[in-house]
Length: 293
Image (cartoon, rainbow, N blue to C red; front, side, top):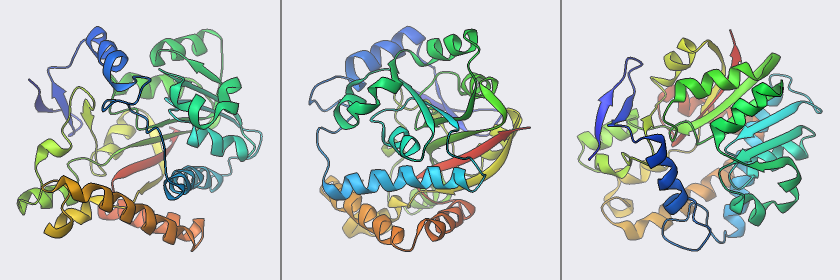
């Protein structure tokens, strides 16, 4: 049903795009089901290592912001806050937080104390309401959301309109059709269908195209880093989880344990390593910190 279509910004977008009604129905009935099904977007349980890993990734985002002198007491809004790990890290860092998500299931399970700072709502409805209310924030964050929305350009414009002077936007997206993934395709060690997955992901960014795209939307890149390149396990047929799905869990925990080992060197060193991943064009997720031009 879906094909790749290259945009003027040099990233791929699914074609044809679903309608908003079709997309809302998809998330309502499959992606955010509040039950333990194959389509549930939130795991019912995590191991202690997985929880430490999620908290580490969230702390790293806050650490990157601290390098830009974002201080305690700053206002922090997360759009698509999911289970609340980033919102929790921001709150613990002393920020005044506010979060919105399609469903309260994840945040109720993992960070119920954050429900006082949370609203269940359609993302764009909420953005419109914030503008009508005249709300402004020092930081607007969205983690693994931009690839899902029908209009990423509109979302970037909406967040910029909500920034206080001197504020920042933090965006995390998957690094798809990356240098590593393209090399794996050349080596016939993966297949494109492993990450081209509409209507879940509609837009496919990578380290090469996300910078010019964001600059075209009126942003300046202040920092960029990538998470551990779990795709590297596809280079070895013994750990290739695309061709042998039984290897997926082992690869996941290997990545988790590597990140936790890297964390022991301190957040400064971890951040510098992950910045290097971005410069090399590898890494599973890209995090970009932006200011308004």
